[in-house]
Every structure is written in C-alpha cells, then in structure tokens.
Length: 196
Image 1 (cartoon, rainbow, N blue to C red):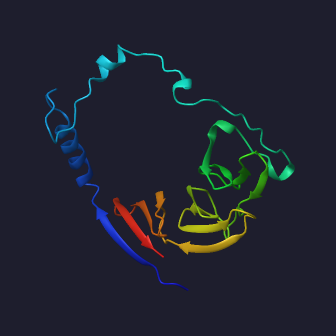
Image 2: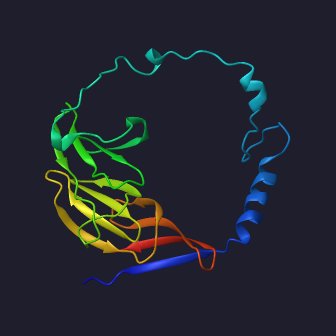
C-alpha cells in the first residue's frame, strides 16, 4: 500500500473570526480608486439600475438533450437537487450527500455507465461529498476516502484513504488533492494537501 504524504496546516477556529473581521474592515473604504486598490462597489446603487440581459448576448442557441431512460439510468428523486460534472464525453449527474450512484451520460444523452456503487467496502462509497473528473476517470469523495472509478464502465480503479472527513475537494492536474476538514473534537479547521 502506498504511503500518503500529507501536509496539514491547522487554522485555529479562534483565528478565523479575527481574520474575517480584518478582511471586512480592509474591504470598507472610500469610493476613490487608486492603483493597487480594489474598487468599492455600490451594491444599492447598482440594484436601482438593473437592466435586462438577453441570453442571445452570450449564446447563439440552447440545445435540450433528452437523457436515455432505462432501468439502470433512472435519476431518483427531484432533479433540482442534482449536480453535474463535465467529462470528455458528456456529463456525470450526481446528488450531493446521497447514496445514489452517479450516472454518466454522453453529450447526446446516451447512458454510458453507472459509477461504482454504494456500500462500506474499500471499493464502494457511503455518501457522495464531492466528485472530480479527470482524463477518463472520476473521483468520488466519500467521508474519509477518495475512490477513483473508470468513466467508461463505472468500474473501481483505486482507493485513497484520507482518514478524516473532507469537503470542498479540488484535484490538481498532477494528481494532488486539496481539501478542507474540520476536527470536531478540537474544533480546528484544516486545509489538507494530499499527494498520494
């Protein structure tokens, strides 16, 4: 088994409110702009000058693509609670904090594969915290592990145990992960850099 090299930087939860307050104070100022300073935005003034923006200014067409419906490709529950992740062939549709398997569809709506399955084994996931797509794979982040699956057939590829709950996961092109974690015993927030 590969040894994980992790760098953990603790952000004391006692310092977070102080940092937030300093950021807010630093963001408030006069409406004069000078080189090197961020502009102050008058939100109330902007709200009173709302203008209509037509979609045609940004897109020439909208394509509605019906998804293939079969017993294995049915989306459970309310579609409004679903999220999507882009792939080279199409999209993966998944539900955050769910045990429903992510579903991979092509750009034409053809069902490609169900990604992995729910369970407690090394090759399965509990609840989906987040997904990251890369190359021909998808990482499913689930509580204290990151499982990688093949996008073509949904088969298991590898497991990375993290040992602690994670959220807001980002995967860099070199395979390094960065994520946030909170230690509920010490009430410390952590930024984790994981280089498997």
